[in-house]
Image 1: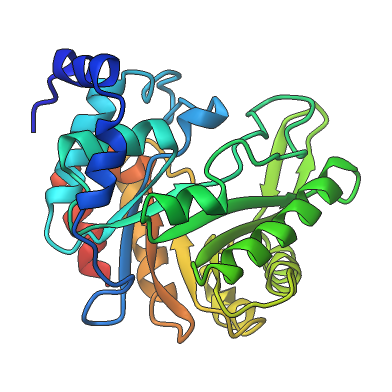
Image 2 (image 1 turned 180 degrees about the horizontal axis):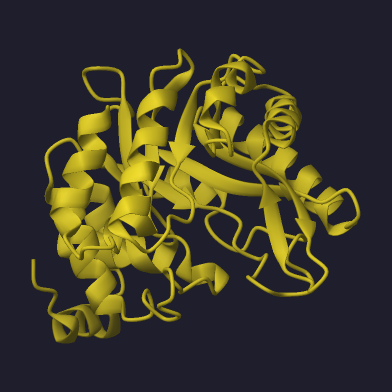
Length: 296
């Protein structure tokens, strides 16, 4: 699909109400597909200042290119929906690309990549009331916990309250938890060891006054063989996140195999994958998406 940026800008300039109108008339569907699975394409990275893919520092910076990749991904059979911030979802609404799709609003993007306050990840994106007002289907939030950074406590508490607010509206919220730490150079890294992922799942599962509408969005551990024991930590339904996949075809194929094994576990219901599908090593978005769908 070719995106007419002039028409998008015209609508935004002269008819800003068109976004709400498109949301109101959008045909909706259930969260899961007929097989009880979920395949979501993620595109909420730019709002955190995370524009890079592999060695391409500003790969996600061209908005028209990103929108065209998203529209192509959403058009592929088996793709259930998209996770993004308001600016991207508004564009997709105006393009008619969200009809009959699951729409997930990204809630906290305040922890900008590389910032000193990165772990004080405040809710600068969709609020629960926005998700409800627009008729979206779910929300997603990021929870990174560094035992040495007090900002993590602020994020932990605000995450719990967001879970409460979403549960009060009977809206699913996908919590993406990590145990994180800064390197000697000050760069934040997520710990993907079995021990760390187990702890992050246990912490995230216990947040809020109800877990009835809480889902988990979890990475595959460093050793994929540990996933069965790790996922036994909680009975909450979960999806796998794609994470950063290497820039070669071989590394991408390795990621697919890791996902394939973890998708067999009883609590794992699907995939939420972004950059590795939208910007695959060989450039073939349709093939990358189709391969991921096939894993389900």
